[in-house]
Image (tube, rainbow, N blue to C red; front, side):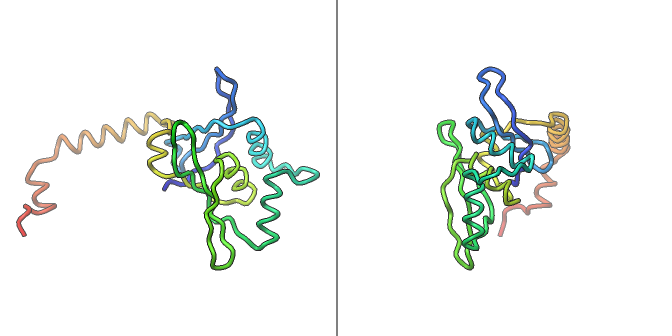
Length: 165
């Protein structure tokens, strides 16, 4: 799994649909997730640390967690099926842990309110992320190409053995 942070909310240039943008710690990969207008507002209010006069849905969820001495341990965006992302809240109360199905946008909105880490399964990042730092990606690919081009079979035999056991 890869820990990601909310980089912000963007609008799709064509559809004008909101997108929450997650980035990895190295700022090399971004994961765009299309969300609804209400979820975008909920995420933005958490990012801007706005407190509503009365609890909205995500604030209510946080209040319930706190009232029942539950901790949101982490959020996991675990799969992508037919262009739909799936997430789970990992909630702990004492020694008991539960996984609760959630839309990624709701999970992110609650995670931001509780300073909870957001994790994304590597296969989801591989399938749906976009490169952010193309120069770093290219440099890494070039370094790998140079390593491979200078590699000799005897180097592999020395390192891994000849297969005889």
